[in-house]
Image 1 (cartoon, each protein chain N blue to C red):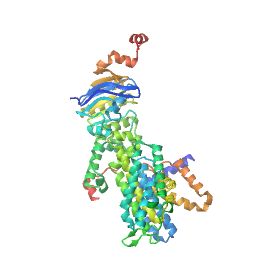
Image 2: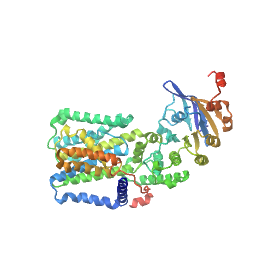
Image 3: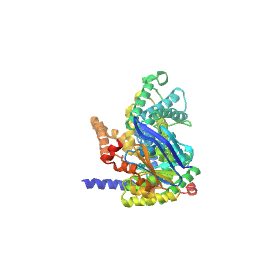
Image 4: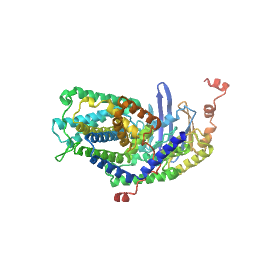
Length: 339
Length: 261
């Protein structure tokens, strides 16, 4: 039995190594599949599910920068999601802005939230930081609940318009919204890829590995932690704006703790500190409850059990691993220009 | 003018005077050791030099610049880098990445260079990787370039810490018990390695318990006990110093009574 599981994990390892080696082929292939998928005549329900997967992939990707790369486990990511959703909803529904025009403002307000959590948590680590973030998320939700004049309180904001690109409304029927989300998730992935493969990403990972040693090697750990918070919150806010526009009606209870936990689970299940992790994490965690609908009352029992078993047998996340391939050394600048 | 000039530094934690009135200096190109029994305050001295603790009193001048009270990052920029008694590598990162992290302060590209992968970015990353390879070659870790730091054997991890410190372009390397946990063969090769560092122009300050290492490579030695300097001098002066012998080996009962301790 033991041997069998060893074989299984070795087979999985070589599968991952294979994927890593052929990623130049596999990644474009997967993007093509993702682009063709909505054209296969699925119902709006399925398209909505796929949009949900992309939403949680994007926000998981943002949180991954904080949790997976920097090692700051935030339990309050919904705060930024909420700020982003409300900012965009108010500007589009009440002030008539174009959805895309709100995104810079969304990034700004959400990252203000990021600074507000990031600065006081500079001296905190581990569970203390997680709980502070959790408290912050609750504060934001209560502000949304009680700031009647701005957020319409518990009544929420209705008929939030869909994104409009040069007169074309991107909705679930013409699949435009799906493609907008696909572009968003790819852009976020590219951004995180560029960031993590630079001195910034190395500094963040050094902080995760050993903060004291990072500081004593000349890394301004405080600024980098705040930077990670700001980037994570700005991206989460933008995703929140898309979310508001997808469901078209938001109220404070759309942004409860469940959302933070789900996002964190996406990161952990997929594999912390990897670019592919959030994709698989979101697919599993969004689809599983839907697939289990047949199990009726046992639905969330099975769901919870699956998470527990995963933590027992693959704590690094399903796709979390360390590549055995050699480190990719940067090519000389002249060649790099030609690529 | 000495490269590092420390005057009367003191620090206490609560009521405990961990280091009191300790002065020493290190000339350029020297290997200086600080020794003393466990708990004598050696690592505390290192922590004050590198900005982890701020001394309550006294001055630390490096290269003529007062660095008492500077943040650790500023001190690294001035040219002091250290290793740790209990190894503190970035364990989940590759060996070469550990070294490149050491170059962080000298990688001078901005956020937009990173996003747009400008020529400045590519040149800097390329040069850093090349230099990291050279440093790994120099410390004898080039066969481990692509490994993860946590998979290295103990002795090699210590070398990697030194490589990372070198990568900061430091002039003064502060080594906290580099030979800890090494066998005789390993510490012999470490001694040889530290000498080659000296030949390459590095100034070295070290804490070490392995007397074989200390006596063989140090140009000068300072001895600390209970946070106070009890002796300083050449290795041969130190071994015959009665106070040092007392600190290390203790005194007989009669001696103790006589000392009124």
